[in-house]
Figure 1 (cartoon, rainbow, N blue to C red):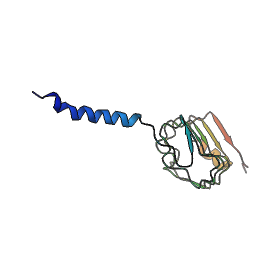
Figure 2: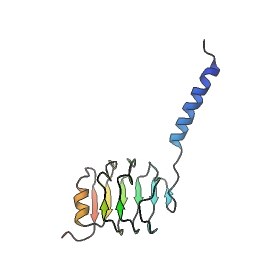
Figure 3: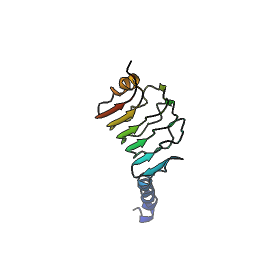
Figure 4: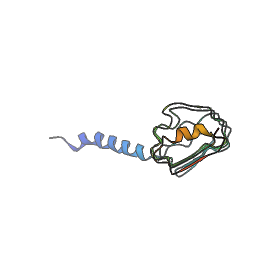
Length: 135
């Protein structure tokens, strides 16, 4: 017969795993976070910040110097609903860069024709704002 002490490490381990899942993730450096919103607006960022909390629903990257979107930039952000990318200098988007954004509803972007080409691949987008020439 197993004594209660034999189950203690298992119970403590399970408790630590559950507590780790509930712990809030830190906000990316330079950005500000409030609830499920991450605001990185106007920070002269050259790339999408790392360590964006996985529970993020709104991400504001407007007014930066982002030139490239990689396939890892938004990986794991399955709850993201609003993504703002206006006033950047994006010229390269890696294939699969938006594949985890299953809940995306609003994408604000100023890439003209390139934006529309990429955005048509999203099934859930209800509002799409693209600024720029379509020629």
